[in-house]
Length: 213
Image (cartoon, rainbow, N blue to C red):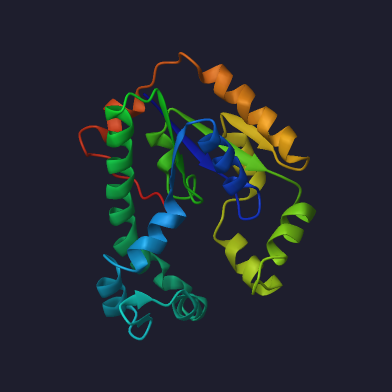
């Protein structure tokens, strides 16, 4: 089974790409969604212990946590130490389930894939990308998003040009959805029949050891 990483900076079109792959019958793990679930359950106690006052009624208040991290960005490492191992376990469970059902390919959608070194755990990496102007327009259209918040998010992400350089495949999402879908379809066709090594090497035994959120 091939293990494919799907990544790209904020506003580049990861969600749309993932949705199309799912529509094709490809299993896609959403690391962001996994974090949301963990914040409402397994991670909440440890987050509150590390960041007092950021949990309300047993659920991490993302606004309070974000405010804390804006004031103390050095504490990102503490949060990652709590969350990353939990996400890793969820990713491995997903891949084991995909392999059991006979999937020939599975996708891990990971926003900070390159930033955390997780590309080495993949057979190939797809990067979605667009122009800075389109990216900015998309992000600032989101409810509650400000230019300062966008700048803070981008500061934690590897520059798009470097992600494109490291990618095995780049999908330009500047055009229509149909054009984006066509690029993804071509990639899936090119991967058909390719033999993967990452699953057995890094995931089947449970020894995957790079952070991936």
